[in-house]
Image (tube, rainbow, N blue to C red; front, side, top):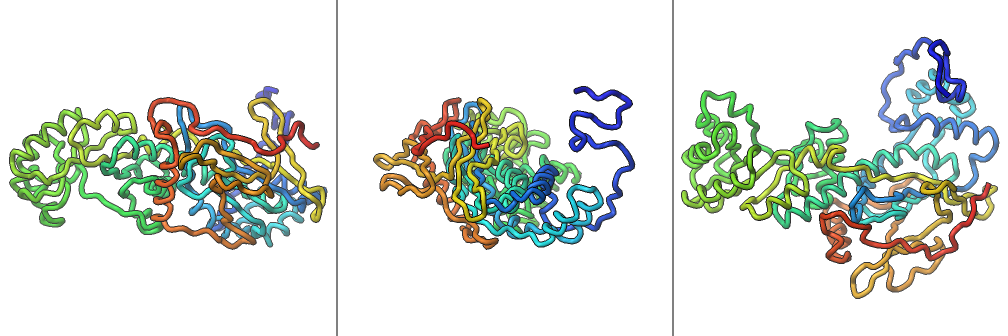
Length: 466
């Protein structure tokens, strides 16, 4: 229905399109709780379920993607280490409740229920760094409907963003073929997204980030020296290089493309000597300039000086630069923005529920063509043959895991307590192991089909329970 210009609301849904009027004053004090990182309809569903008595029904929700981004052969799970603490601190404190009350989001009875909320269920998830394919249940949430429904938006926000960056970053690591990779994307993203992106990139094999918050919060190695502004600040390039070497030592990285690269390299060697750590080139034909720089450095005896390049790099440009004598790549825009990391496409769907608090779980599923879901509480395993993965197998939750399957899910949280807290280095190691199980063709950058088929080794629901 198209709303007329004089209508105060769209009559198709008065809740979705409320009547116009004076906006609610944003006078509520800020809260550190993540509880308002929630779509309104999560709480209106809760409100109705509390009123009709279904809110306490035991439920199972799954987070999965129906398809990978076009041409991608696998995805990489990231974000669980950020998500679990957020769920543990997910509280509706006084400031949050006041905001909900002022906006009339839910009833007074639901406000009272939310005041005592803490997640009381269980979370089972794929470990960070794990590979996933369509229909992989990367996160399973067990709890009452009330417990689980309010977490949907937060779960999807974290996992969709971080896994998208990790998927793109993993391809860049493959393209780099063991050369260094530095994450430089902070200025191209929301300030909090930049921190999350730096963490996700490090998990899949990047060597460090320019983002100091990622270093302080998560222990990601940080790096960085100077930008063109530092060179332009000084009266000439030599003075700028002398200042930087004086402050940071000859092992620093000097940016040599502000004016003329060969001249800058000559000046850099005169200032820092043969012990110059690296030169960085940020513009122009990076491959040709890297070849010329390597010849110039070697001729001067600076054989240990590394060459770093940057400038709108992605996995395809990195792969194309493979023949050039480049030691490391700085990657920003194409890693941390949607132009480089299409969304992971995760959804959060109810797959089982009981009719009463002490009743048995029943599979439920949504119809609707390509958006149909497969009900049942599922266990996931990766079937291995000769050390290589050949299928993603989904079984009923209580099924026995076959000996040739690697179980993919770990219990990450129970009754509000975080149970799974691997270190970043453990996650990086797990990611390498997960990739090593795949057939070598799965790592190809060219467009292809998902690297593993998904096998449903359980009765598939034929029609949704209503």
